[in-house]
Amino acid sequence: MGKRLLIVSNLDSSEPFGAFTRPFYLGQYLVEHFDVCQLGLDCSSVDYAQAVSVGSRSLKSYIKAVQKCIDEFRPDIIYAQETRPSIAALIALKSKKSQTSLVLDFHTLSAYEYWSRLSSVDNWFQEFKQCIKTYIAQGILIFSGHPIIAAGESTPKLISQWYGKTPRQICCVGNGVTEDLLNSHSLNDTDPYQELRPAKIVVVVAPKTYGFPTNDMSVSMTIDIAKQLENSPQKIHFVVIGRNRDDIKEALPSNISFTGFLPSRNDFVTHIKYADITLLPFSKQAVAGGARNKALDYFASEKLVISTPEGLRGLEEFQHLQHLLVTSYSTEDIAQKILDVALNETKYQPLAQAAHSLIKEKYSWNARAQSIANVLLSATNS
View 1 (cartoon, rainbow, N blue to C red):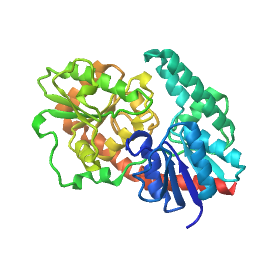
View 2 (cartoon, rainbow, N blue to C red; view 1 turned 45 degrees about the vertical axis):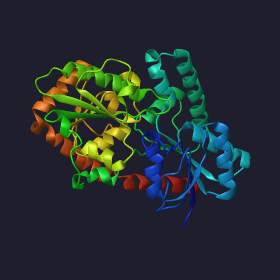
View 3 (cartoon, rainbow, N blue to C red; view 1 turned 60 degrees about the vertical axis):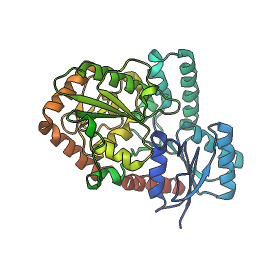
View 4 (cartoon, helix red, strand yellow; view 1 turned 90 degrees about the horizontal axis):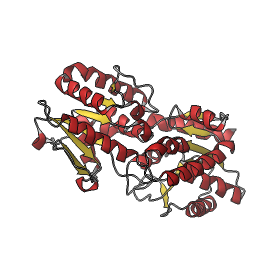
């Protein structure tokens, strides 16, 4: 095997979505280019490479774990994703006076996310403190001079706006999709929504995630949209994947259901496969960096996507009326678009087909890993 690669991230096998997705699936294909070791919060699901589970989100724990890996695994390259793992890797390398190459991965600009939500959170002071902390932390990473891989096309522009600096070595490599979603039509299964038919099924994926209220906001918006369509002659039923009904404190309309967390990957794929419409209902305040994963999953499954502008941040290649329907942030507008699609499915099916074709051509995890590998290798040669 060639160079040794240590991937440092927040990978958490107990939550196989969100921050788990990028390091896990990239790691599966990066093993074709490197001798890989995954280091994350809980790496018990990593069966394709060596793995180290930190077991704690504390920065001190991460630093110690990275230091130990530097001594024992002796990586040629450290690929650090998100803010805390990246800071830990930077400190560990300096403390060890190691010449190991470090490449950073920004899933998003975290300070921008916190700042954008300030007007809509309950604990403004706590959110503001977090905004300042992440601004300083990511600033340290940006000014460290190490190469940066950005998961979204908007990140370099935001760095320039927020820090007055455009990193010399920065490139954009977004997320990918898995083969099981691209080939979901071949699954031998049954419709999980049989009892809800003949209603049209609108699916929203919104698991409870650590630290960020983005999905909470999308669930609230979904409930508001469902209320507007509750008494529509055209039966429309909303299904929220990743939440339990008991998680919701407000009164619920009759046309919404909650599946809870689907631990089986096949169950998740099946629930997307049999949806009629998929929805990305993110308010402007949500700053939905993680929505990219959901959008790509929907496109890969050849489902028509209805999204607010925020739901597509970082996926500018997908266009309104070419690949999907983009609404305003008004719940009334979203409800009307859903109703229109439910009544005119054939009219909008070409959009889903066009998005699926684009996904197959450019968005496989294998292709993304190849691009990442090129960046990592160039960092060792610079």
